[in-house]
Image (cartoon, rainbow, N blue to C red):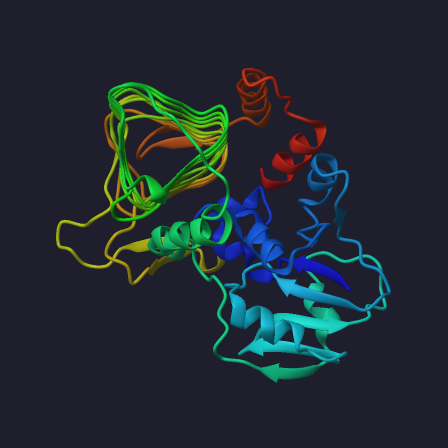
Length: 400
């Protein structure tokens, strides 16, 4: 049986993070949404439907994937936003030919033989028009970015039990390192933990993936995940509900926050209840608020409606798109949304919504020249021995 994981029109609900990636590549817990679906169905190959804007970059990065291409064989299509679990898997596998699983207007999954070979997320729902609809209001999808923050700790626990708990794990630590509840800790090959580190898995599991460095006197409280090749700096305080993707450098105080990957917060400063894309850099002593002084729920700029909406959450920090940066001593307001390619500095409070490709102080910004952005992004990636490719230039030009 062929399987395809597809994005739908609600990818815009997760802007600015999904301006530069598939919805299926959003991280929550330890895994990305697509990885979790693939794990449940034990998929050996990856077939995805993404936005037409992302097609070239996905084909460039993933030569062995089928991107926006489907065969005429019978195929199970799965929405990348689906909250997959054992019951949901069972409901999908019991679909008959030419049936689709729905919750309200959302197509959760479908089973049929496509009549076209080329598709993108913009027109994928047209594939399901003539299918018999099977209603299942018990199956839900992710709808907003702040849901990832709220549920991240629970998903770290779940992914630990599903993916890491039964893996062989024999580790030794340096003298002076404290590991509390070691059966709730998984440490990958090549990971170095320096003296004075405290790893406290009392309240939830901690996974330190391969080739991670935890520098002296850092404290990590579970549930938490530190991705491959990442570095936790001296005296860092990593609190529960934090997921740090690959190749990040993180210091200071972090709580209930997701780093997609390749981003830096190396210095002191607080970051809480936030979601950072890739290639983000927060300057020294950047701080964000994640709780209003009146303790009311936080409003957040929502791209599809082009206005702020009530998140119905009391704790919401910042959402920062790829390749955005803050200068030293920056202050980020509660529920702030910063687009891709921004460069913000100054002592004033950063405005609650900064459009992509803007630079300047918190309240007075100007449009960033595209060629200047590309020049900086190329330098940033070369520092990691990576290139800012032609496909990336094309994608960011379209966003611009």
